Amino acid sequence: MRIYLDNAATTALDPEVFEAMKPFMLEDFGNPSSTHAHGRKVRAAIESSRKKIAELLNCTPGEIIFTSGGTEADNALIVSGAQTYGIKHAISTPIEHHAVTHTLEILAKKGIVQLHHVQLDEKGHVDLAHLEELLKQHPKPLISLMHANNEIGNLLDLKRVGEMAKEYKAFFHSDTVQTMGHYAHNMKELHVCGLTAAAHKFHGPKGVGFMYIQKDHKIEQFIHGGAQERNMRGGTENVYGIIGIAKALEIAYREMHEHQQYITKLKSRMIEKLKANIPGVLFNGDSDNLNKSLYTVLNVSLPESDENDMLLFNLDLQGISASGGSACSSGATTGSHVLGALYPNSKRAAIRFSFSKFNTEEHIDTAVEKLASFINVAV
Image (cartoon, rainbow, N blue to C red; front, side, top):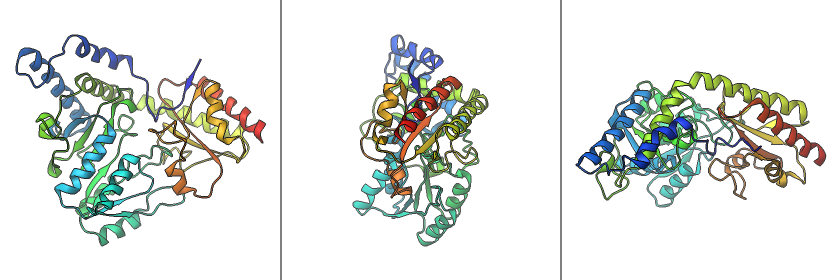
């Protein structure tokens, strides 16, 4: 039996989602831009999916634009947001997802914006007092801060930052890829200009996502060559992906409270068992704080050892899938830029375990048992 504990990287497709997608793979194959009956039926399904997502987020259908995933959505909101409003300053942190950090660094390198990093506390949380200082110094900037960090799980007070952004007339973008489908997002209460989602993070299909663009902060078209997606994104739509993301989000909202409780118990169980079985174990960021971190992510800091480089490999041999890096580079050999920024001199090993509704207590117990056996032998 293999145990999958890398759900922040991707999640298993929910069977109910697959059933919703199947007709649009095999039967309803029309191009949604065609005006005949085949095309009209598919167009109606896309718009029905858009409406469903808008209802769940408490926004209008016109504020939802489908994309290929979170990376494209982040790029579109940042690049087009800066261009549309002539933004000269951007405020972010060095521990954002690379879809954000690399995009901002390219804009800064081209001289389009000046990039300013807000200070972080010792746990990796955004210093809101310093954020306000930056907002006072740099009028009408672009703010890009993720709702939950994909590696350490730290949560941002999205509502508070949105209020600050509104006060200082900033264009506020938030990467919500790790929290969409796990927390409720009421867009009538959040002063966010744009946020992003990827279906495969909440048991939907890969290769599809969406961006929410607040109706009073529209941005210029990002992909040209067609009038699809409200003239915002050219190209034939990923129809069955769109059907899938809407169904996945519907299921996530329907079962959200139940899953939050269930997965939080799994995370708590792993924290307790790691502390009991591995001397010197710590946790990176605030990932062991259930009130300040994403309930699906636990980033474990392990004592220094010559065997640390082999930990993920050994876990994999034992049938346990986990990550040592970010959600989109689990197999990379380079170190984590998030942990490097927070713990530049640390030589401790780090493993990110991330959970879903398909995990069990047995999975947790087995993973801790195997990890403890490697650590205890090494020390």
